[in-house]
Length: 255
Image (tube, rainbow, N blue to C red; front, side, top):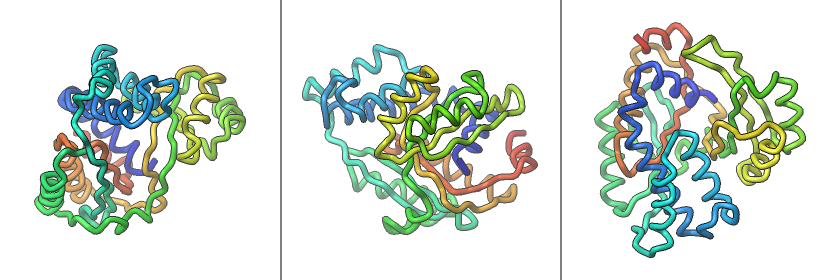
């Protein structure tokens, strides 16, 4: 996915994963608590919770942290969070979607707005960039589960829409299979894929750009600063942008 996969590689190469780990655990816990509070606390009976637990496990969130997040919802002492999406523009007109969960809308709106402004972006109205993305289900598998044809057949059988296979280039980019489906089909498709291919690396709902903006080094650096600043905010769950970066620029960013 333009933007997202590149960004994951940049984070990996820059060694930001350890710094972000505590924040990732906190964001995952919040999603699990909200999902459990909105539906059944049993992941088998609650698709959103099942996906949240699965995604938490994929980034090594400990079992006790997951269980605590679920019991927090059932114990009735969980905070009430509002899910709010913000849309805006980064450097060079790159479209940015910011998904938040907050117990204080005014605080979050103010922080997100000032973060955009301080980092060369502009916060827009809801819907101002959303039309440049599709809401999709995304399931990822390592290359080891099979070749592109095997995964394509499994994906077709499962009711998926598309498969992208990246052969990778070694340790820094191990490659993998990315399977796309309609957002409403994610639970069903991921279950069918697991029956055929085993446990996925990641299963989640994402914003998939329909158009992308190619960035040079300077704009890419500015965008990275904006995304990093947004991700630092505890109220922010995900940040997606529709940028494209060449391998040459990617190499310079990773230095």
